[in-house]
Amino acid sequence: MPLAAALLLLSGSAFDLDPMWKPVADPLAPARAGKVQCHEPDPDARTCRIMTWYSVRADGVAEMRSVTALSNEMGLAAEARMTLRPEKGGLCGVVDATHMASYRIVQMRAPHAVVKNDRLFIRYRDEMIAALWGRKHCAFNFARAGDDIRLDVSTVDGQFAGELMAEFLWVAPGAGWRLKASAAA
Image (spheres, rainbow, N blue to C red):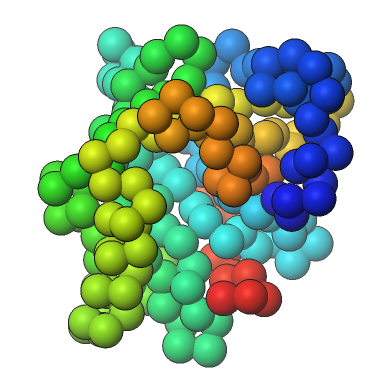
């Protein structure tokens, strides 16, 4: 979400969001129903910058697999896995050695086969380490009545992280959605 739009949302309740945005009581209910999270969606083109699959255990702990589009021209994406635990209405995890060991550079189209690109892998990994190594990241979901778009609001070590705010949709696998890097990528 552009910073200007994020700033417009700031006004007075949970995370100072516009009161039309309400916390989602069960943020992973769509995942348990088999849906995939599509971050920064373009519904007309049926594209996502990030697609995330969740496997949710009975205790609410979720294993997340996320694929982020990096380059449309080269057809490359970054894949990572992380364990997230429910905490105070959000899903939280820590970027650590286990998380970083899961990073791969993959083809942007399914089945997301691993691609040998050490330069890009090191660059992407080093940026993640610099930004989040050993820090607790929590994501909180909000929705507006009658709108399929959700808002993902994050904290890092308990502090609001507006730069990580993003809109997303839950989409059905096999419904024709695909990855596409942002214009700035």
